[in-house]
Image 1 (tube, rainbow, N blue to C red):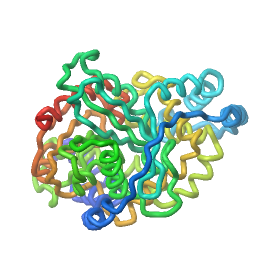
Image 2: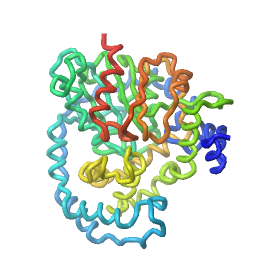
Image 3: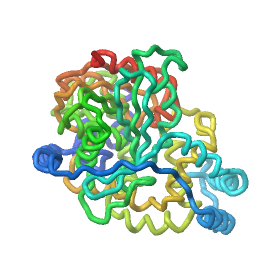
Length: 432
């Protein structure tokens, strides 16, 4: 028995159990075939009926009272007792939590980040009854390819800020005019400065349909899409509904699972199954809570700034390409920019509902068969790395696939240069 098979057995996770867990169990995307079929049927009847809405400029302006309240809550944090282990196996260690919260209280400057954010053109528009916030930066190159970038959880528009310049102005960042993109970065429903849904139904398919409306509203008749985490779920949904103008998509987490478990898995398949099994057994507690009781966990996260910070900080630690210290990959400032967006918009609960909405139909990590031209980049420290063979089975038109040597789940934030180059290469074949 191979070493990998031994590990799988020792964790009581067989290849079939891991695969079925991905396809049907407590999973990230909940993109079952019934969900997609429902979404496609509705797309034909609802998208055309959506009223056109105004696109209005927007600037972030957090009231000072909200920042003062944050400082007071941080100063009054009641700490739990210390962990009984010497690592992160019980969650964020007390010393690490205290360092993060102390930095947030003593050194972090929200206004500095607010000015940085407001340097980008931002807008809001109403789609399907919901206000959607987005960044929209047009390239100086007239033939630039429009692209919509979709974040996940616990990400936000913060994930993509470092790639806006390289994507829109490639000649200033090692590229050519032929590499240029017009960039659209929306905040998902319930995240950041997009509205919080007051009713149910905002799953990845509904969000994908909204993105199709948004790109048409901005005047784009030919465009591409990209996403990771829940943004990958939305991007796969775009691949199914194929709104007018969408010509290709790229993801950094392919939601592809073979229809039948491989009888004789390759080393790459074994590695993917091992990583997926480990995630389901040891790393998906947050998922189960947000997918089943987002309102309950929301009370704690909305009331405790330290709780909100560590809830997200743990994922930065676990999902980035680091050697045990996340600060070697992401600065404390960058992580607190993202954490502060959640806190200052009070969106812990509304963002957590993305899990609840997308697990109602019992789907899994498999988004099914897609005919749209698809591309993917596999980063080495992704939660699990899907083999190319799985994508070839599920995507009939695979136009680009690459496995890079560094980076993790938050690819654009961790490795902006590499991420930018991957998007340039992925979409070159569809620019003509």
